[in-house]
Structure formats: structure tokens, C-alpha cells
Image: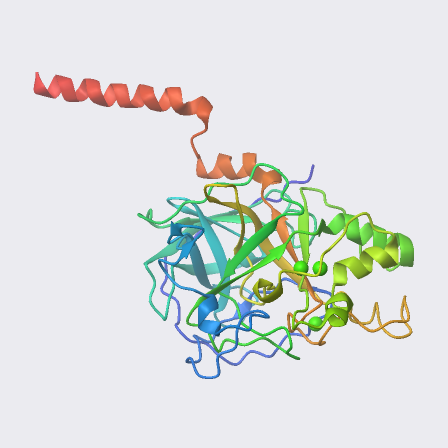
Length: 386
Ligand SMILES: [Ca+2]
Ligand SMILES: [Ca+2]
Ligand SMILES: [Ca+2]
């Protein structure tokens, strides 16, 4: 097996706060590029991060917010601002705390990394805690190729954080489950043409969706039907795929923009995809790369997957005169995270051993060792008293 894991070390360096002026990148096919951070542009003209019809402020990821009765449930989600070789400017990704000193993010957020700040619970330009990154390790197999299931990296903080949630990792496939996505990326409405924006960039955002299938399943079914050659073999794990279902109460349009079901129908696929979660349905956009998808296990939020890519799959594929002579399932073209677009997230359950080997999370088998250590401490204390 090819192994391309890399380690890296730098002195902590403060990041420039605001950098602008980078040309918009041409976006076709899957996109995993982190987004240029322009510092947030004030709060006028706010648009929600999803199809939510309620006030956008209801959908901000504000510090201390309660989800399923867990106060501050996502305060362990971080805004990552960084510079990297080959990228001009300061870029944004997102990440999730998996030990007191490690954050799990996307592998592509660390390619060529020069320096990075990590801001937990970032709300209205204030973070609960801020750290710098001293090193990173990319997942074995990450070489810049999306859909191999290896778009993960662990970044080490310069000092441990305290009193923030440390997320447990999902140990099984969460296919078919509803999840909540978190991140500090750009926001949009699903109706927009062109790039989502940073109008609400002073806040993180959240929304809901469903893991409908994995990328290898839908891509290989599609290729078998079309010869389109979109398939990438999942060498190291799996990538969950989600569609951004349309919602405004119009049933025919809900069906039209139910992309994953339409792909299944067009390719004799083995999955199914419902018409979405109504006003709570959302999709990631630029800057959300590396952020977490969480499932509820009955008592806590568990980190299930890490945002990897967005894909305007329908554009030019299912359209009038295309594979099926029917309306397109892409509501708007352009890198818009519009209705009908897809996102992919790297499943963490395939990578538990690697993650634990880096962050040294105590497993039940090591409790004995820990207790032994405590006994030694106790012995020392007794000796001092004697
Ligand atoms: Ca969906
Ligand atoms: Ca759907
Ligand atoms: Ca689109």
C-alpha cells in the first residue's frame, strides 16, 4: 500500500487578518478548494446558509448554543485560517476537536500548509479559545485525489484547550442517517447563481441533511450506464454523498432537484434518496471544508464524517437532450452550492485506528496502564507525607 502521510513542523506565526484580491477559481467537477477569507463583510444583507425560510440568525452556529439538550454542543467546531504554499492570501477551512490538543480536518486543508490559527466557538468576531498549529499529519493515502476516502488530516495545537467538547468518533457506517453539518464557510440560499458569499462570515453555520449513498456506489453505477468516467476507487475508506434537496412547498420541483434519486433512476442505482428535510436541509460551501458532520447516538453528538468536496454533478449531465430528456436537476450553475448540488464527506469510521494512533486517545485496553500510573502518583504522595 502506498503511504504518503506527512508530518510537518513550524513556529507559530500570527496570521494576517484580512487578505483580499484573489481571482475566483474556475469550478467544474468536484471542488475541494478552501475559500479565501476576507474577514467577514459585516452583517448587512445577510443570507441564510441553506433553504431555511426562517431568519438567518436562527441558523448561526453561536457559542453556547444547545442542540438536543447539549449546551455548547458544537463549541468544539473551529474556524481555521491559514496560508499555504501555492495559495495567495489567507484561506479558511473548518475543523472539529477530537482530543484536547488535536483537531480533525480535511487533508486538502493542510496541503502546503505554512501556518494556521484555530478559533473555537468563533461568534461575531470573538472566539472562545484560539490556538496556533504546530504540526500536522495527513491521513495515510491522502495525495490530493478526492474520493479515495483519505481526505483527512490531524492538526496539533500549540497548547491544549479546556472546557470545550471533544468529539467521539463514529465507529460504524452512518449511511442513511440524518446528520448536522457545521462549519465556518460561505453562506447562500440554494437559489443563487455564482459564488456563495461571506456576508455572514462573522459566524459559523449549521444545517441538516442525510447521507444517501457513498461516492463509489453512485459513481460506478453512473459510469456503467453512461461511460462518463467519473468513478474514483475508494482505496482508503468511504465518502458519504448528500444532495441539496429543493424546498419551497412545490412538490414537482422537490422531485426535480432530488439529484441522488434522479441519478439512481437514470443508472439503475442501488440507493434511494428522499426529497429532503424541508427548511432544515442545507449543503456545505467553500470554507466549510474540514468541518464535521455529526450524528446523534441517543445521548451525544458523534463525529461521523469530514467535509471533503462539493459537486455540481447535474450540470450538463441530466438536462434537456442529456441522458434523460428532462429538466436539469441543478437549480443554478456556477460554484453556488445551489439546490441539486452534491457534497461529499470522508467517513471517519474507516480511519479510527490511524486517528487514535496520532492523538493517543485512551482505549479501554489501556485503562489498566492509566490506573497503574495513578497508583504510582499515589505512592509518591504517600512517601512525601511520610
Ligand atoms: Ca438531501
Ligand atoms: Ca434527495
Ligand atoms: Ca449548482
